Length: 353
Image: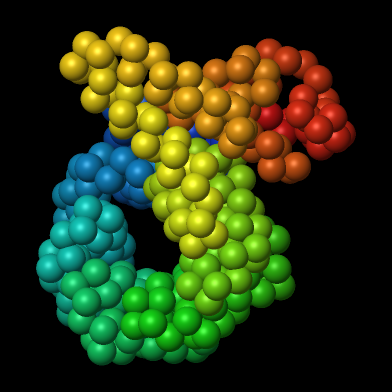
């Protein structure tokens, strides 16, 4: 596969990925790696694979492709490619909570001499370093890195980077218990998305909404927290962003705990009790908790309104509609209706599922 064909296949993969056909995009990019002899094309497709696996939460795969990418950069003997690959290596280790390695790779990036990409990627390096310092609870160093990344964003008019830094600053101030600032910065990120982010991935909106939800909860504004978290979860489900889904679920749990919603606590209690009595062979007690568990599922609507199965018991792909009702993706695809089966609103737009 030559240079032109490699470019075409990379572009095809990007189109599939942007239309949420992630697995098909991965197949296209994997074939490029197997067949292409173009080193620059291979480097670019490895970058696509690093990003895709990051957003799917497959961090070990992300690291594997980052290591291959840095070997490719060394073959190319180009400092710009080397900087980009070291940054992906830093991000991979950041996701795996290997924060000392992240900082080391970021310092390597900053020490590379006079690359053209330094201006463009320097802010992202500082952001990754700040996230690593925050993971190590080195708050002063984290704040210095975030401020440096923010200066890069302002000096280069990089609103996308500014949005990401604002979300990280939201996490920072939440950890140091300055909840007003913990809300201010993700709200700023949401403004940037509304003003400049029409061509951005929806993940930036989801990210800002999640951090707003956390801050609202900490401030005791639980209604606003729930709205933001629902919006973030809806986008995360649409795009298969499993790490964000997990964060939203934790946030939902915290909101319900703050509200004193005992139903969800009872659901967990009955689920745990069921496993205990099942292991001990106590059938009468087991049946009682199974019945109560399903009653709780019914009360909290934690089930698919089409097939009736409870959501969360099996690893199934879910789909949130604009009205916020959640169903199994396969059920919606087989249903054929253009309105929500629960509330019958005409909210299923063509091509939404």
